[in-house]
Length: 469
Image 1 (cartoon, rainbow, N blue to C red):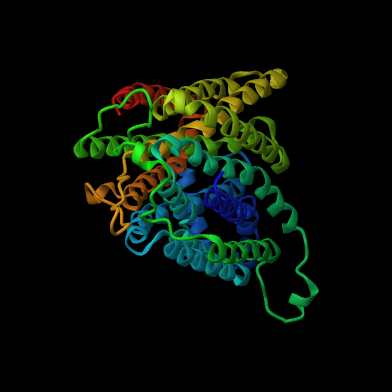
Image 2 (cartoon, rainbow, N blue to C red; image 1 turned 90 degrees about the vertical axis):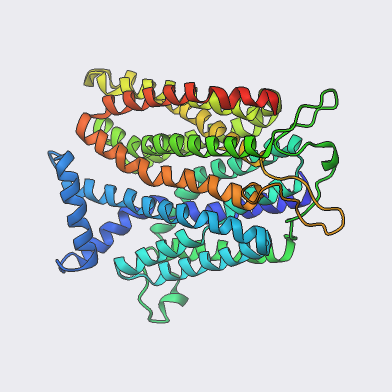
């Protein structure tokens, strides 16, 4: 791992720790605001929960504790708001990084994230907390820019192995970040802070930790990250532009500009469709365990953590070693097939009678392994494949990137690719909830499995196209 790759990986770990710490707190935060602001029927939170309750009642009327379902659904909708904002700003962040440099835009993005954490610490109303989420959604650019930076400094032959670091960082932080957030949520605010007499959010301690992590990351990046836009990777002269993989024995024909644009469009569509389905499964998984097994937050956390651990091991081992032989398109297709299998297993879980709950849990665990393989392969492979279609040339005289087409510059192309995936993440949980409550979990997961199988078939041209890249 080169110096810049180490810098990017460390910054990603810091950033994703900060991002994952508040994830398990969403329902608790909403419950706190409900107690605090529930007496005001005209307040922002009361009106929001009333709207959520009306929508939920159309599709589902729980036998008990409807308020709990509304709080969980609102937590998911808050995540959808974040993804929607990312869908809107990702192309602009990419374009600005092409124009003003990756490092500069990343530091500006970090300033926005720090502001978001500061607002969270002081957010004593639900509206101010939502403001912090909006600021965060408009500012977050670390993952996207990390992809562009790693694409700048690696040859096409090295690209997939390098970008696998992003998936490893995600898996590690999603295992550790939420438990850390849950632990510090029960810790009191330091006496030195309380002595200031300023009213703070009930979860100001996790917010303070998030702020510290973001500040450390920003200082670390400012001190160690050089500008990479226009960097000529080592041995880049041996690599072909337009997605060709370096091979000392065979020189494969280079794709035309139009072929690369068409392939990028196909990859964006696959990214959107896959995450639209997969994010819905992720969101409803806790509904399933709550309905069938009455699992606690810690049990759900253990399930999600196990998925993250297996995913990290697969990313660091199997994916990094095999993707250069298998190819990005085929690797992503294997992950989608694994997801379809996992969804079939999930669709069978509710069909077990109550006295066979252990058998149902075994099916759930097998499904979790399948979903872990999917997490380790699909998005990272599609991202690598998209980056390989970008312009790789650097002008020897000026050191600036050579563009065959404006839409093929790394920042723009990868920004639009991320935007498509974030739109899927915004829509998927909502559609999955509607299906879960209208048709039930078995039908929802069976339909999702069928959708994944159809997606697998549609990926055929993308996977085989790599043979002529």
